Length: 248
Image (cartoon, rainbow, N blue to C red; front, side, top):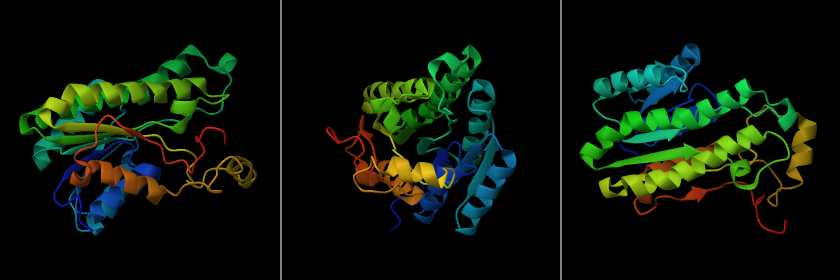
């Protein structure tokens, strides 16, 4: 399936984890990929893997919370590849399961700067070109916790909830230019970083009885980025194995 044939996709936080998974699947489906991450070595590793799949890969490194550095890097990549058709706002940091009494002002500010500020900076960078072409797709990465909350990590929940509001606002703002904006809100995903005991405990609350797999999230992102979802905008899709079903 080549549903992203010849599209140019910018994926933030693509040095590892879900971002790398997105990059590789989208390359397999025909996209060229601008690989962004704060970690330059990781960016170069992902870009090399994309290139092995026969697609162009442009690595850029910046902290998405730094508006000027990130927008300069994106502008350089766009000039080199000619355009950016799709933006996937994937960059983020962990909430670290903290109670509110332990969340210092600097930690709260950093959480919002990366998740919310980072998404704003990247959207501001790519939208002018999308408007000129009257075409584009943006996929924001929220979380099931942004929909339901969680007893700890309220700063993380708040940041992810803010992205849901931004998604709907941007969908309305950009619709006249045929730019679609959607969000994913994943539940528990097996990225290999959770202790076995915790996985067993948390799995009990998931009706499907397991964590999600990175490829399952990447497939959803690829669909929302593709022409196959041309009539979908302003939506939040939460792949969570049924965890958020009312009454479960």
